[in-house]
Image: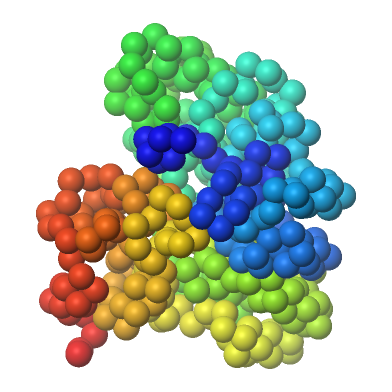
Length: 429
């Protein structure tokens, strides 16, 4: 296989179509709405240890990735995942079921709607309409029910955000981050509207005469209003102008939502091992948790915790190495798997990120993105500082993405430490 093929974009692995990497097969378990029962979590931990190398990652789309799966064990893994109710009917359906939904809207009294039935309807539409199988593998949907954990920082080709309106709640629909040109739809019309817009994207992307792999590429050419018009949807003024971004204070640690507490914890840079997930499920069960919710912020939320049990669960997870403190500097870093786990990576970016964590400036949100190659798999959005691994060190991109033009090249770890020390908000040496 050529280097160009190795670095190609657009292949999102699944459980039916895993991706070869430096440590074996990578199988992504696409968890509907990010909701896992405790039994499912236990079983996935056992699968990771039995059929892979034990490494489990939480993706930015609130799915689980099992690494190091052996070819000979893939069929057995798929059988278990199917028994758990987490396997799609076929590869085509699996590849386009990219939906991120509000993780706790069903528990949050401040949420506007519970998105579960509307997400289920969209999943069913994606599964049964063969025309939609032509969608690019990274084409994604967000269904935001509002409330304490909005999804404004989660990338989406088609975004549905619940809004309060005079006649009752509606979904405000926007395309590829365009927030000023929107349409509105009734709650029960979400699946139909999503399907119509996706089919219009497929049609218009062919007419665009150039490779168009994401909605933003098409909107740059024809504009959001034109695509809405293609589907006979009228544009409207946004009902709210702010796209809230969640901070770790909102989901890490213990938070009351309705009659019970949720406890959020994050594995460092989204990675844990099988024992960690098993411990998380066990601690959650002992605390009386109802289930686990995966989030697009690479954290897990245990739900349904009694007030008296929540502090002990937070303490137990922190003692086990999970991040429960929103001030932890590792939350400002996003890093891919790196070498030797990923065959495309030129450096062990995770080890370098851990070594540099104490030097990362204190700011709101992601400050440092460390990528093993120019693909930038771990973080698709721009970051204040992006370091792209090369054979001779790291290239630096300022306020951009991994594939953008660097301003400096060949930086060593010492060079990076000095660079971080000069940033506003940097910790003293």
